[in-house]
Image (tube, rainbow, N blue to C red; front, side, top):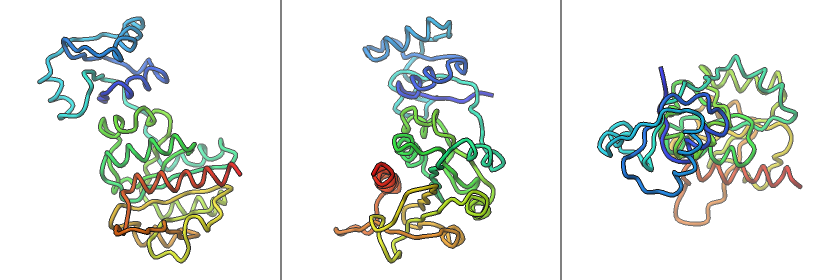
Length: 245
């Protein structure tokens, strides 16, 4: 069984971190893009098979995704589960975790992963049943970040949050419009897990109840909420700002 990735950044990320994962690469015939030249040369130097294909075939395989003329079949990525959490946490001095509850759009998941990687998040936790798959779309939007930030799928998110608090003393901060203080009035240092809910619905009730603290984003305009990936980026980099002071 293999996975599909497409787009220049996605292939570059796998090539940089795990070149042994490549099985086959498909390149659009007569594609003229100078950005592809060094990528193709490096793939060829490793002996990776590159096959020239028609646009119609490539469009079908990527389901009309923005493939930039290149796609690859790779060996499946490692799947992380809740049993992997204790060992992952023990490897980190001050854990910085992102929890996504109900983010079901792969584009949003990919954008959140990209922001998490940029902000130095150690890993991302998502529920097994209410989360977008880490598929080719999410990997493309993540621009390579999906290869660097482990995404851990858990069966019971509330139970996992209890474990984070009880066994590892991780402070859990959730975002909610009804919170009585804002993100900027909260202390976001030390071992921390930030919880972001789905756009519109927000966090589920049990998820919210297992947070140590709820914060909101101050909204001055007409809109009442932000896209979850935008809100995630804002919150993550406020953590970065506070940790750097």
